[in-house]
Length: 272
Image 1 (tube, one colour):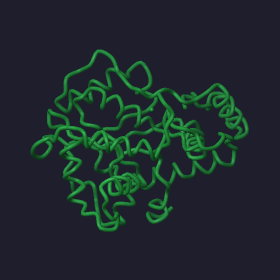
Image 2 (image 1 turned 180 degrees about the horizontal axis):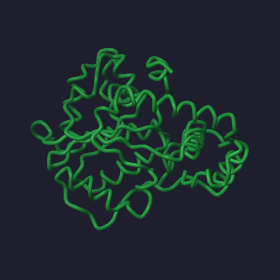
Image 3 (image 1 turned 180 degrees about the vertical axis):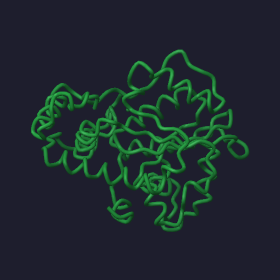
């Protein structure tokens, strides 16, 4: 997949059901109501990820600490267009420095920490617009990845079909994921990984693995991220997000694994 094809991907998009576009609007309204942070952020952190890798859970939990700013997909073109519309700005006339100034003022924590999540295709889209996020001098760049690609691809397909990207999102369609759709999203994830290997991996300081983060090491990993960026540890992880996978999803994934002819030892853990 070329960078142009990658950039054309639709964006992967709490407990009251909302549409994901409404959620974007709520985010910018929340930011607009926050007190301005004065000056430039003292520390800037980026999370580079692919859809359904656990990045939303991690960033939501970091948001809840009050020490990490409000990490979200600010560099998604859909997010940027939403901000422009709410501020009566023609999206074609956005001055990116103006937008970045807004983010630094409104999404930076009182301790000076600013953080953002960037999916692979969002990086590609901005590159097409002549913007490279790595020019923003991030102090720390984390890559978020997932070993169980089958479960990730199934979850990706389900979210893209229903448009329910997070718990609390209002589905717009039934989740009826076919084996061929799982295959398609496996290929998409392979393309994303190949893109990241070329364009972003060399900028990464540390990799966070989904299976580790949702397991017994969760709090240890979480507090290590906080400590490495000058933030205080927490006694437990807080998040408004809930697991979206259901028993029937895990059964469908198992059926797909069997269809692929994989042995039980090769079967994924089904932590979608």
